[in-house]
Length: 318
Image (tube, rainbow, N blue to C red; front, top):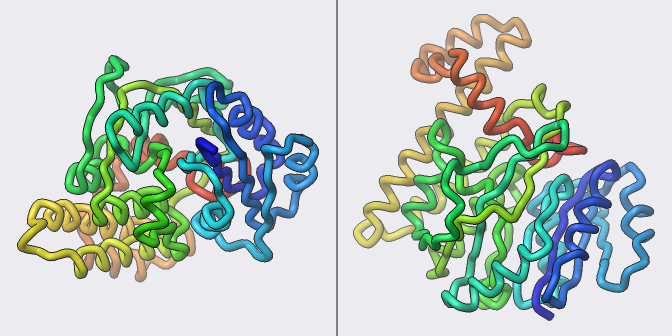
């Protein structure tokens, strides 16, 4: 089998049929579609089983455990040579899987990504995640470049891109999604793969459609989720030989500083919501640079960057 499409889902009944149909419509590949239901309370199960297609497999977690745990449930039963990650909100061009697999084989890569189109609440494409000419040129991404491409407050993060992963590499190196994470799980698994020597390429083509919903804009980052991602970064930094990876350590330090800044900002926002002005001022004194994030340009940027956070239904996940 060429590829296993893993769709992690939580209360996604309103959108998951489109994602599954998009996966089943992939051309020139033998595939399976594994829907990993993170203990949904809506009609997701009935919708998935209603497809009546032997290529669709359904697994349901016993309790809500987050996107990383849901994807790991899919990894454990996947049979494809490649793993394709598709969010329940999103959909793909029919030739995406075949083109990315072909590129992965041709370049002997273990991770392949493309750009993505952003689809607004009206259902129309509003832009691309990465503003670039889609000339189909190939970029090789190494660990330092990838981490730098995920730093908050910079250009749109490479970690938003949905990868295909060579399953044999994951198995050989015993790599899976860190289940403590509810944000940044794709970033984390790719960092682990690159640290283990994976080859990573990106094609400047957009074959993935990332859907943003109106309900998304009221949600903001959760400081605890960001703290878990910070702990992941700190672990990577502590276990990587410093002499061999100076550039990576510098990139990690920048990523860590941006996370700490964002954590302080979300905590200040929470203090204001709770009318805890003493707590707000204590946090502002200890992290004064985070105050700049209250500026209007930042709010606009964050609305774009985290308008659809992982793991809330119909795209507004938290």
